Image 1 (cartoon, rainbow, N blue to C red):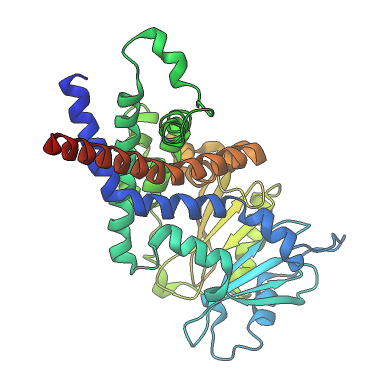
Image 2: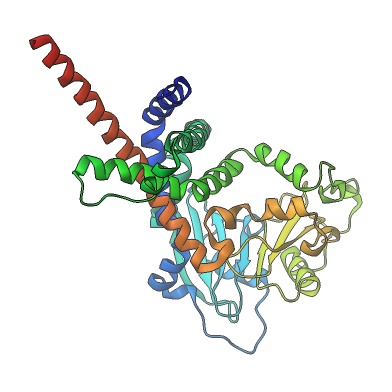
Length: 379
């Protein structure tokens, strides 16, 4: 083996031992989370409603119904989401005790279908482990971020170690020798599966890092835009007329909802952010397809008057901004539909297996070297 490959091998080994446990946990929980919407649709019947010909009730009515049993919680602090004609709407808020509450409602009638404390929700816990390992966010950001950054280097160094010197060896590197001894099978599982998963694994890892550190995405956005920043893509909403603005004649969420329904009439999902700060704009996002976050229009409104301040339509966004918008859908594989989710699930499982099979390879070699040394000492 060349000196270069020996150095890469040492780097691969020690980086893997340092980050293996975090990579295993993050990859495994990521695999579980990929199908969270599909599983919840099967296990939570209140997520679906019967389609009606009537219009949806306004967000202020949904908020009032959701907060009826939570006196003291302000409607202005709620996140309200419409998910399309076949799905329940939701109102999310933090109650006076600090619990994150999500209320599902029939969007046609405003009837409360279910209230959930997300602290005990299975997929919320899985997501929290995936993102923060149940550690304080400030600590987890670096523990997870550094470990996944190491994993990116691991996949690149793994490809260097996998690449055979002679062409006739390449065919062997693509297959697992199932009839061999278990140590050989484990070695093949680590190398062969690692090779097949490397490209998608890099996409999953990098898209996750972009969520942890958004500044990492900025150079890529700039590159996609040809090296020229697109100033029209930056929201520059100013509230210099806040003190003189006339209060809206109707609830602000209703103004927001009616406006975005008029301007984005074909979009299934509407997410209305909190509107009660009075010092920052009220934001709303509409999505072409429910539970997909790539194709979206963005709006900001004056928090007092409800005046539409700024818009960013998907059709007018730069290529770089569209690339940035697809990051979450890339991360969970749904950018390619159900088939993409299957691929993301399988690759995540493989990524979770790599620290395990790699540790077994290292341990086996370590014991083999120790036994060899003992035999030499005995002679």
